[in-house]
Amino acid sequence: MSSPQVIRPPRPGPEISRRGLLAATGLVASALTGCSRGVDDGRPVVTVWGGFESMNAELIAHFNDTHEIQVRWVDNGWGIGQYYQKFMTAMYAGTGGPDVFLTDLSLVPHFVVQDYLLDLGQYGGAEDTGDYDEALWAQVSQGGQVYAAPVDSGPLTFFHQPERLAEAGADVPATWDEFATAADRVRSADEDAYLAVMGPSTWFAALVAQAGGTFFEYDLTEPTALGVTIDTEPANAVMERWGEMIQADLIDTTAMFSTEMDARLARGGYWGLVSASWYSWQIESKATSTAGGWRVAGIPQWRRGESVSGNWGGSGYAVSKSARDPEAAAYVCRHLFGGDEVAWDMAMWTAKLFPARAEARDSAEFLGEHAEFYGGQMVNELHVESGSTAVVPDFSPFDRYFTDTFDQAIFDALHGRLAWSDVMSATRDRIVRYAREQAFDVH
Image (cartoon, rainbow, N blue to C red; front, side, top):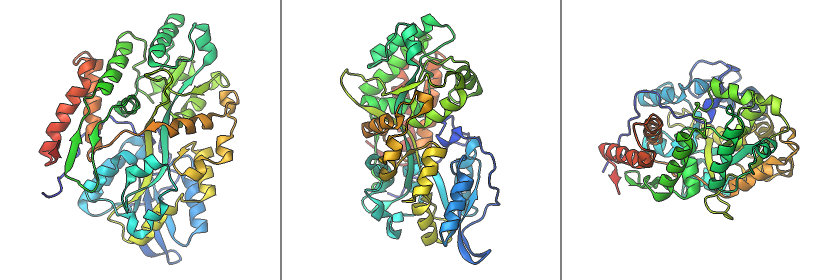
């Protein structure tokens, strides 16, 4: 059987990726161009799409100052939702694509099926095994094949204001049952306050993974075979629990990352938030009036005494098959961060990323940081602990379509057109139908 042709829906999906939170500022502008030699002083130049807005200019300048190969960075619409549409269009057309590009790790299987990614294993990528978080490395590799160099991930944590919770007669919840009780007490104490806001489907997927739910069984070496679960008992339990809290108005349904949510955060309307480690920067920048009153804890458990977390987000650099100098592009992909301490310092302290590279993650400086905003708490220690027990959601070869479908089912439940208990089964039915239309052998 030939590889299936996976077609992304023409409309922009509602999925909000990690990088989608960062508004593009145009630190660097450049026309779209491929990798070429003979630019400026004759050194090879590699075009890179996407990046981390707060550090792009400094990161690229540092790399270019310390390497023979030069990087030309292109801001191509990540922050305004145009990035993947542009990438897919360029790859389909066979022209105008990047050499290296930043991607959500969840999309790696999709791009592999489309035959858009260069195997970094043949350019030394397999040597990087052991340098990165094991779960993240498993997302981007299969045996000796390597399709991306991870940069960051997003272990789930519970951001909260303990003094406010105490005022409401609520403890920091250790279980989801206690979480529901605490959410109710917060609403009773202040009608403008919530203990959490509902996230998009990618957020729900992380919570489902924490509960033990699975979505897919997929092996990059068998690109046409796909196991579909989705509608599992743990997944249904997660959706039903959150659906009950949402229907009781215990959870805010304002769109996450919206200006409305930012306004509530700024005026102290959230006494807690369930999110990924990388969301810390958003709280710090918006909730300035409550600085020092926040703390970080592990997310509640389904069974008391357990210690299981989830992971929301994660990105890495990959090389497209349109790269005009694959060897130079692979080098940039592997070494833009690689083992460079200066680059990782930028990632950890400027962009506030949770590092995927084990050496940076486990460094004494990172683990020992006392976060002033969190009352001097060593929050990175907790993030690392969460990451060590985080279950990464399993992804499909058409993750964006799955995300769109899951989001639509959540939207229907939110507006009373679908029972929360039926969200996962409705999603599964649509995904199975779509997968078979795309010539997958579904089991």
